Image (tube, rainbow, N blue to C red; front, side):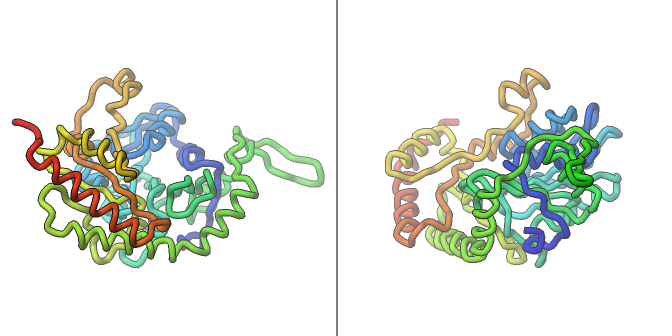
Length: 337
């Protein structure tokens, strides 16, 4: 794993959520600290910030779902310890700009790359330019261990802390003698899961090639479509294509649930990624109501369609045909403004 990403250390965990908690803990983030992150992610990204006693500060996103680096600096305070960007859907974030901001303010970059194993930008693998980066091996990610995650880093100190946190904080000494030197947990990945991960990692290039072939077919089929837009991946980037998000035009925001239901009824496993984290009731009750305009427009617009290595050409053709047919039915049933 470390060799694949291009770093010195990869520390594997039983889940990406555990890996996030361990990365924040290894970085020394704790009570009273703040972390700048995105609201367009699975809740674990921010939940583990809370779990270590810190507070997430949410920045608005761009139309591709990635955090907008232009808004990061205004969220930085004397209590900020790290920036945690998420490579939404596998599209790499603007790491050079984020790294520059972090270095200017003496902050860490802990990249939540759960969607993005194998993604590249400028010839470098996602995860290789952060202080630490977290990957997920959940069942629907580019490779899977059934459930699992990893933290990768070039920092020897962080790697040692991660290993201690992962396994009860215990250091083996001599023979039966051991010492618990810090508070730790049972976050270890099982040997069976690790064996599956090693097998999957050997196939990742072919998996990503297939995902990108399906995405390229969608790009061609949906070119010029006026009812939704599709992801744009810069030529210097490779995306893991964890997600293929369609962005519905505003007139289709109102019938979005009907479109979703109609596609599911036709056997298309669509999903929406993600409700902004701050709109969950727990966050509203704890921090009050917040509003970030692009994040909320993104949530109203986004609809993910299947795009993975298990799909045949016939599957991709059926998905594209069905999406175009169903969405067209709602062309004249949009919102009234």
